[in-house]
Length: 336
Image (cartoon, rainbow, N blue to C red):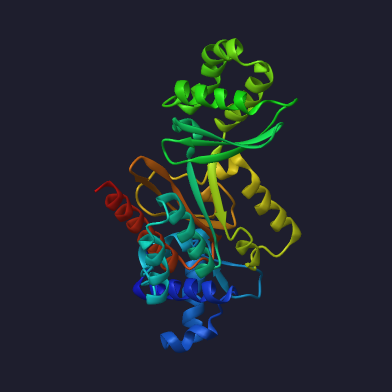
């Protein structure tokens, strides 16, 4: 059980280390606590014994451990108010009616990433949780087009389709018309089987190059079913932190950002803003992930801030709570 002074000491050490990225020694704390260096050292040694602090090497001061950060977040942290300037930037995004909700979320996280110098991510639900709403086609030439696939959850994906041989524009139009007629409302993960068993037999009856056209559209729409809408902002911000100062550290974290399996671990199932420190994140032992789930008018996903364990927890938690509130308010406005 920690005493009042030990709690205050731990709070000060965590916040000092967050600011400086350096181990905290007893000398810098003596004046603040009006105690002798020996008293502070004893308290620090006890905090280390309890597992809240750790040494980086024998002669250094102490830094918070994962347990120390967790105790700080759960018991000692005082949420920091968002500055008027930061608040105005976020309000401007959500007051812009020309931006749909998806874009407003992405833009606001870009701003938060710039404000904090951390990495932010919007993680949409997997495509299989969507239903097809529309397929639009933009011809580039007789052998290439861009298919725009839109789902009922507002997910939009552009697919470049390249044909093995020249295809007439009229055949593309017929195919697109057929796809929209027969696939609208189909769950995305059921699209490939519906294409194969219901649409393919019909296409062959009135399109000359039906195999070329069908195969190209089948590949584009099948690949879509396996994808998740993920948008990172400030991906390199985390590399500016002193915790990631070796080539191996950089390679490791970048490879995780590029891994679909690792990125999927960022998904949050809780409605509250949650803090996952180090090993708790299941993403990387050297990071903290602050995240929450949003579900507005059928649009679901996770918003998250990724930084070092030495993160400005008080600031980031409050920012994410503020953002979540604006997302929900915007959703209510669009519904009314």
